[in-house]
Amino acid sequence: MLGAYKVKEELEHPISIILAVFLILFAVFLTLHNLTLKPTFIDDFKTGKVSFEDISDIYILKFDQVEEGWPFTKSDYDKKESERLASKKQLNELIKILTKHSTNGFIQSNHPATMYRGIFKIRLNNNHMYYIMYDVLKSKGGLYTELDISPSDEPNLNNGKVYGNYLLVTFLEQNDPWYRDLYFEKKKPHF
Figure 1: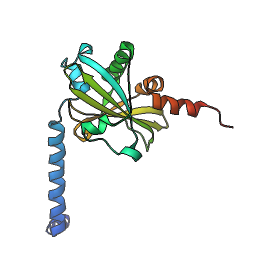
Figure 2 (figure 1 turned 90 degrees about the vertical axis):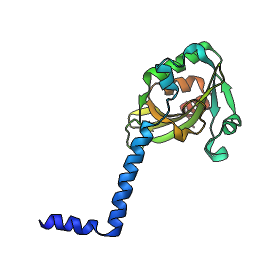
Figure 3 (figure 1 turned 30 degrees about the vertical axis):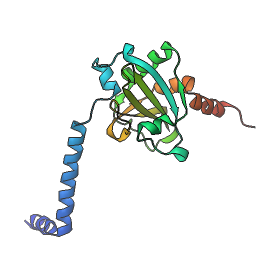
Figure 4 (figure 1 turned 30 degrees about the horizontal axis):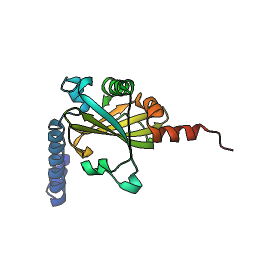
């Protein structure tokens, strides 16, 4: 009985009540936010809303957080240096890696180091856009990517979903010109 009295006494304290209400409201917010997230490129591709034939272009955008900051608008993305993936083989390979090998949520890792960051801009034939921010992370298990993917025509990645992907790193080593330069620079012997 003494324990119940102590809990009652602590809940009568105004700060405890405010904190309890805040935590409950925050839990409700997170639940509703996850239920109302719009579908991303991966979702739309898997459901058939988008197909290989719908994709017009895919660009790799150079990301420099220090110089340019985080992109939030279409014009922020348009200002970035970019390289178009030229071949259908590259497009198909990237789409397969993204749609078949990405997992919902974060890949569990203990304090990974961010090695590189870049952006894909996927433009459809109907001029709708998808933006994918990717981080190449390094942990004890090796390199992997974490993806922030926005819904269609939503440049603010805060409104998207997070995915993890192990296979994308190899694609980036071969196709992202800025990561490729960084990757091969690290492979050179330093004397």
